Image 1: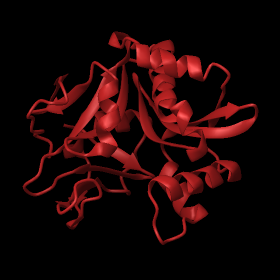
Image 2: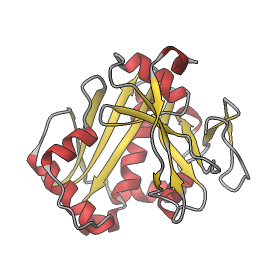
Image 3: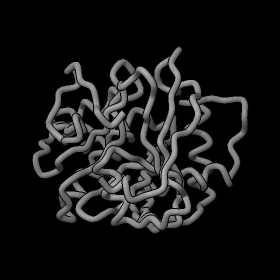
Image 4: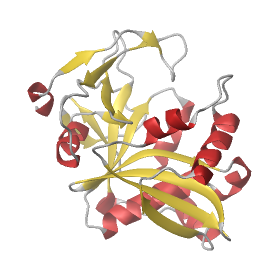
Length: 242
């Protein structure tokens, strides 16, 4: 396992942001370890994700609700619902750029958080950038525009053989367009176009409504007992990586 060759540690317990009343704990890869898209691909295979330069996976005591999931893009088939989303957004202009700070994207992120994840603490530009960017990742920002108006941004990491969906945020006033669904569909189709095998989607968390959208994209694979295999979201599963 690639983690065995890296310095890492377990963080302290803290309130879980997904399941109320539970504590969460993460294993972190040391930020001193020289990461790259190649080594990060190996960590994705072992159930890790990144937040900024920090690479982590859950290791919660007494809870194994978080399952790393990915989608084999060449086996994916569009449903009627997916086709409706694409048709509804046929006028959208999509632009891909390297990761660099953009004030318009930041302001859209602020609006998105205010509508979807409100807090009393204002979001700073530094906090935003340290969350979405990374000094070692090959990150792309995918803009979705309607008549030059920015309505959504998908942050995507490129690794050998795969794409990894980092984060998506969008204009709350454009919710009827299903911009989150559009972003995932674009990433699936882009991974297929590039000849990649997988789109990594982070964690499936049973009982968490915020994660229910991932069940709309099939077939899903989950990391279970240190092996990736097809799974249905209603299966009673436990991940050995947690």
